[in-house]
Length: 238
Ligand code: FPP
Image (cartoon, rainbow, N blue to C red):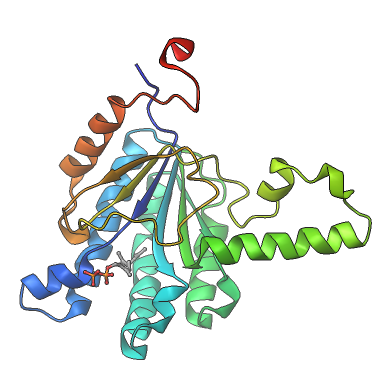
């Protein structure tokens, strides 16, 4: 039987459609989505899974209407303020990856505050991908490595997998074991491209605001049935 996942990543999709179904404005979906974040984070930590990474805001999301972007940023700040105590009670450490410098100051300040105040927590690492794009992450890594090669800090023939990993925003994360996407869309959307090289993919039609503990359970039991061969034969891994 396969080991439980060490790292789960989630593309939380379907907030807008959920709101539309309820005859509400898109933002109502994001508010309900933030409540789902809180429930699922706690449940994943309870299951002793060490890493949870959530796609909270992509580089591409920046081109949504300004009003929606601003409201999402405000929701993020209020969620961080609200959840901070619970993160500590559950011994969860918060981290963030992405181009954080271009986030509004209110988000940066709250984020840095919670990251600092939870840094000693050991139960689980919760990483929020914010203003994140995997291609942009790889481009930044290549730029830094190129400069180091040019300045003879890294010999070109020594550039290998570990050189790339150590220059990614996500350098402290292990490979993703299970990637979940909600809402019926079956694509990766520029999320964690490097770290999902051998992830098991799980797509569910459930919209993120409706995603409950039982849906997580379903994803985990589906994962259990997978055979992770990493390019080997079935016989080799038995
Ligand atoms: C996708 O739904 C969701 C997002 C773009 C943002 C994710 C944000 C949250 C879950 C809420 C706040 C987050 C945290 C970490 C507290 P969509 O708007 O693309 O939905 P649609 O495809 O149905 O329109």
